[in-house]
Length: 210
Image (cartoon, rainbow, N blue to C red; front, side):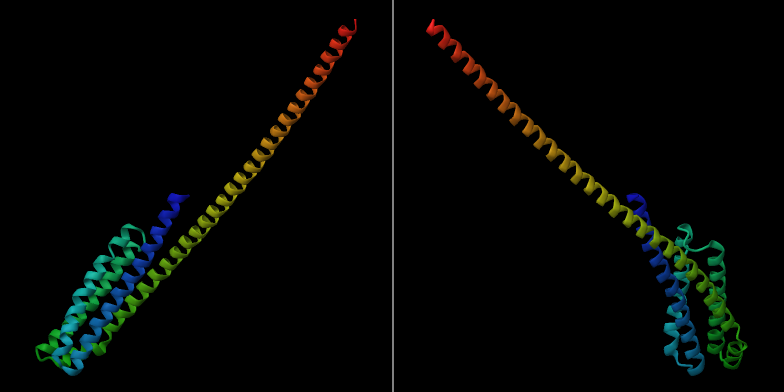
């Protein structure tokens, strides 16, 4: 039970790490989208740096999620769909920025208006929501197991403690009983010695009178 409790605690920590990593991936995609829209609307170069940084980080974070496939925190097919949707979204973001930088601002805005980017983000939200729901169920199961394990441990400790107390109580009474038996035996031996002493004294008196 102790080993399984340690495994459950590790799983709980892993669930937490997965949730944070998944949400961070989505947040980075949103940052990239914000940078793209800021650049398309204002044409200010200041939006390009955060866009480019977020674009690189988003794909790195998605790649990091592969480790959670091995641990079973996310389904391989679901992660593949999430990665494909994210890559399509990043391609849409990059293509509109490239068009705007080459002077094709109107074409870039038209792509934005067609809503393909929004569709990709909606799909990403749905996939992440599905994954988080599954993760919540796994986390709840792990917490229930830990609670049961802790309760079992406390009950076991309590039973051992009560058992030890009962043993000590039995041992105390056993020792007291043996002590009382020895006292009675010593008292009886003393009485017997007194009787024998009295009998010997009586016999000596009789012989002396003769």
